Figure: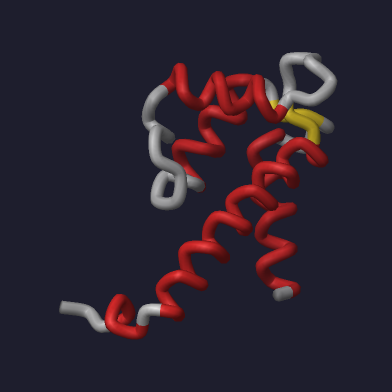
Length: 96
């Protein structure tokens, strides 16, 4: 788990180029490059822009680390629900 936390932080810092916030282009790049397999619509610029606006609690046009962590939390919850459903249905775990 420690490695996962370090990865989450490192991805943010690399994407923000050490700044306190992710601008629109940086957020777009992060989503397209890091979340393409978990987020549908990650290739749709307008969808990613809308997601950024929804995350932007203080409406400054940027995504802070806390706002980024909100996204990570939402995604973790969604993955948890998906995996929980799969574990409840053992047949879904069998590759065909």
